[in-house]
Length: 320
Image (cartoon, rainbow, N blue to C red):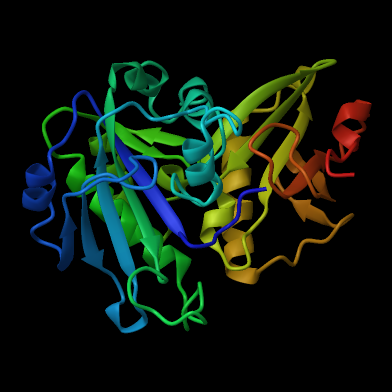
């Protein structure tokens, strides 16, 4: 499963046409620019780039590079596209990016309806990655510095992405680690709402998806909770029988509220615990090593104590 490593957070902006390094420099002039790199040896590892300071006292850097080709959603073939596959495996497309992420994000773009088709217009992208081990650091430099704050880091990366998204030809913001698509206006509104209410903008960073898994059962899950904590937080799956007429907006809110609870309290929900939730029923938690649906990640799977019997596929763990 993907994990945080050399790169600890990331996002990108899809564009209709390539963005020049000069455009990037001009757009990011309001940040603390520490380096500009015009040369490219392998696009998958990095295009022409601007490096920004973030927590410079612990070598915090955010690299913003421009790539003159579409997002490589398949992430490379290990035999025939070794450089692309290697770049993906080392986190150069985001610490939690997984093949097919852009396609899934478009299919499940419920928070921004135009996201279902908008990525079809893109032919280039700008990539934004955070790291603490780039440049001249010692061999034993920690991947995660003292007082590492993933939410502060995500906020900074998102602000950079929003700034880049003001450039001409921008299609949308894409967080490959949470498979979330948004236009610039939606991102800006979400950030303002989050700040006013002292909440993290979960809808910008983490998608909520809906699947029909057969036998009349639905699964709604989160993608991207691993970005929010250290150690990485598990994602959530809520399993309900469709015939029970559960209000899916209430299920969505249940997922977000449970994520916030985990953020505030840590992984205190254990296998078999029950939670208070919507529809006046208790919800039984099951800890799972592997999600039902890609990308692969740790899960808390939640079932309503409403007298229904989930099918076998929902009771199993893909992780063994």
